Amino acid sequence: MAATIAGFGALTLLVCLAAPLVGTTSIHLARVFDRTIPFTDNVDAQVFFVARLPRVLAAILVGSSLAVAGVVFQAFLRNPLASPDTLGLSTGATLGAVIVITFHIDTAVFGISAVPIASFLGAAIALGIVWAMSVARRHGTSTTVLLLAGVALSAFFGALNRLVQVLGDFTDTFRSIRWMMGSLDVGSYTDVAVSFVPITAALVAVATLPRVLDLVSLGTAAAESRGVDVRRAERLALVSASVLTGSAVSLGGPIPFVGIIVPHIVRLIVGADHRVVLPAAALFGGTFLVLCDLLARTAFGAAGMPVGAVTALLGGPFFLWLLFRRFR
Amino acid sequence: MTIVEANDVSFAYERDGARVLDRVSVRVPRGGIVGLLGPNGSGKTTLLRLMSGTLTPASGGIVLDGRSITAMPRREIARRIAVVPQETHSAFDFTALEIVMMGRYPHLGAFELEGAADLAIAREALAATGTSRLEARRFATLSGGEKQRVVIASALAQASEVLLLDEPTASLDLGFQLDITALLTRLNAERGVTMVVSTHDLNLAAALCGSLVMLRAGHVIAAGDTRSVLTNRNVRALYGVDAEVVDHPRARHLTVVPLARAE
Image 1: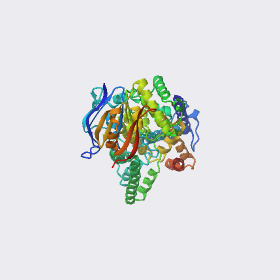
Image 2: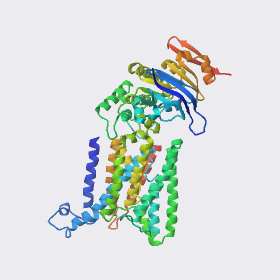
Image 3: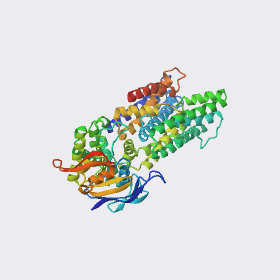
Image 4: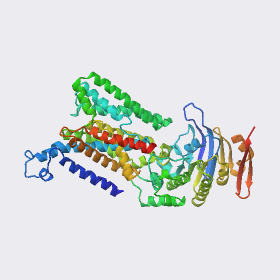
């Protein structure tokens, strides 16, 4: 168990160190850390620390958050198709961001600009609706109903989103569309640091839950009869997963499929035990997104490609394969 | 001596809705096996869920060793009462051993992981239910009888004094029904585990249970020693079925032969 997690950890570390070295401008690790050259003259160090490292860190945070949120949603809804995307949280976040972009709302709170705040709120509202459904579930609503509610919510928020975009001009629409494609081009360490706090807090909360996630995947009654306070655990888990989703989307946009494919890949490799699944998903989610982003900024010329398009290109077919494998 | 008792409990799933249980009282003696009999919808499963504390009665109370169960933390209840549901499905591919290890949950602290002692207890529970060789198998790939024995092992790993079983043989073939009956009899004799078993199988109840409680439409219509309760008359009152209850010389317990729906 410890060896598996250490393996994932080593992979993450390796990818994180290697990723900033790769790009359209080639740089050398030795020169990056060469202290004899002043930073202002050291182009390699500048590319490494200013242009690429924040982006890699953002990818790690976003990928880990989405993957862990996916693991938590899948366990609590007892459904392998649950994820931040399928529950409507990502679409909620998108709606928030598009409203702010279109109506040029630029009020900043504590130096955090309006787009991340609005997308966070959008995810929170979507969760509120799913939450209300999940409380009603105690009287017999199935998790299938919750997933269908997520689908309906996604469609509804999507429609509102298009409605808002119609009201905007050409530039607004372009900005909205770029945002919706997802991008980890964060520009500074501040954005990363701002997301780091809630994400870390939520990950610590989820770290108390691996046994509970095992048990709730057998059903509420089974978990309760083994001593789990399901209501309390559910509150902690769903709030944490939503904070993770909201923070991730506000940092990188609605990057699709990470929250659903990473948990499945990890479960295929390590099995079902959440003591291993959770840390492995956090590590592999980050690694996966760093690699996708590497592909996004190198494989399609200097202009690059939105990372959301890369994850969707990989994730779409994988998702279909998963459905086929499960339901044939 | 009584270990669990239901005192005058009533329950409805919806406020102002029909009462599923109406002033039901049941006493479970320490070390005994009590059978819950009754037609579909008579309230057997609800009574078991009240006894395990996963439902709270609208009135009346469940008392465990002299203490009201509603005042006890869920973790503490789980250390003393384990539940074997009719069927168990997992959303993920757990191994049999992982399922059994889940029984250790109420004995662990918030950040504590299972240690060697917990693993030993889980392995011993697998051995006691004859499922050691299934340890590494994926739970979903096991047969119905194997699954049920693994779930019973998980309940044993919980190391509680009381086991509540909801129709433990309902989906099993004849061979597995006998296996489970023998397993439960042995666990009761060797470990003194107290059991409450709901079932539709009158012959299983006759073979396994020292006493019976007959529930019809949320009321207890008969309760007591198996030999005094399992009669032609009570079977007719309970199910509306004419049956002959005979003492089978080779089975050495009562057997029930259903004849026809009563007029």
